[in-house]
Image (cartoon, rainbow over all chains, first blue to last red; front, side, top):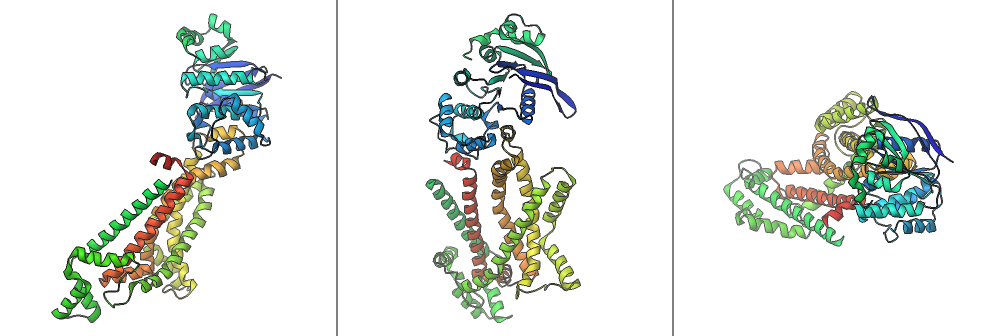
Length: 227
Length: 312
């Protein structure tokens, strides 16, 4: 079933930072949302998640940095239990093992607090937590910008592997076209609170239409990066 | 963990030694002749030189600073606070009597302060910036600014003189404690309200909270499991300072309400230049302070173990 959200918009102290926007995602679709910093990408992601959640849809969100996802005073085990409780699912040891294995954090000590783990592992823990309920849509807001490129690529590979035979759609928000181009089949470009271009990745890269998309594509060297 | 605890203990020991030395040195070098003051306290005006010499020898004033310091410190380490230089009575039993008036009052005031400030801060932070919140902040600011001696006198004027409901002086019955407890509790409540309020507001601004809401964690659970522990960290930290203000306030309040507690004990000892008594109170205060701060440090570390991680 296609996930749809209409009329997403946002204002900040009287200024429109997100103009009314409609979004749709097919099951299992991989979509990238790119644009310069301050173009409204994160706002759109938050609005999308909040709107869908309010409607009772199954949607999960992974913030930019683990600092924005984990409470430094609480253990990893606490976070996991709490996430299960929030989803209304019973604690399931096997599911946790499976997710931890998929993201390769099975060696992490759950009794520790977030800062007892490396940042890369923290972020993978946050992603694993987002996958507990096998959501219909996973929104990832710059999920790897806090990680070094090698760890970031590894994390994305693990996530893609996990999602391969599942129906979860993925919205990848990033300012890094290189990351998005390799991972998604459809790209949207944002500029000044509006989506100005929405095209299949191959078409986007070969024939960008808008100025914003051309500017992003002009920096070709991103293709050399590992992610 | 053991290393950290040892470090904290060492720090406590240094503070206590410093307090002992500073107290002794200050009194030793205080202007005026202490022997004369003692003699006057014992025998009235016009004491002879022989009496003064006798008192000097008896109190050890002739032996020099370090000898006198050691002569005081060594018995102190064994729990002997010495004898009053005015009436020769053991200091310890009198100190215990004074404490039996002061400590219950301090605890009741602290409990009163907490009982008022926690709900008040919770109500105020429901809607930050609302008239209720602003009113609470204004009231708390006024409360912090009002000196205990003034508030104490006002309460006496109203409840003891005008209305005649409560006794103003003494400590014979439990009703005698009501006005002093209100006086102290008001100040404690005012400053705690401010601290708890800002602690809650700061905790609500933690960057990870929106993610918990998006994860579907119930607001009530977020408040209990994430906001409250973060708000508690600054509150616990300031509780130690709060105790210092409380001790200070106690001295004033006890004198105003003529309660025979530590405050009155200290003030009368100072006027009589009764060194052993003054030193006993100061050392006692230092011990209380150090023990409470040690406890607070440990609570703080159990709330936020990152502190220990940084120290290690």
